[in-house]
Image (cartoon, rainbow, N blue to C red; front, side, top):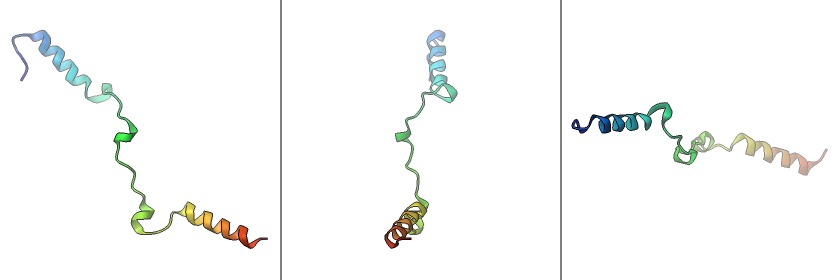
Length: 64
């Protein structure tokens, strides 16, 4: 509850509360966000880039 005896400090507290929320809020660090989920691991399949790298390596070993 805000102190109604001192309207100046009550207003400053409200301004500070509003500044901590919305477009003026400080940006969050990327490390604070949850890690992205790898769909390929969830379904138990190899990632396409890994499968492509294996195929290219296999083709390089075979020759042309």
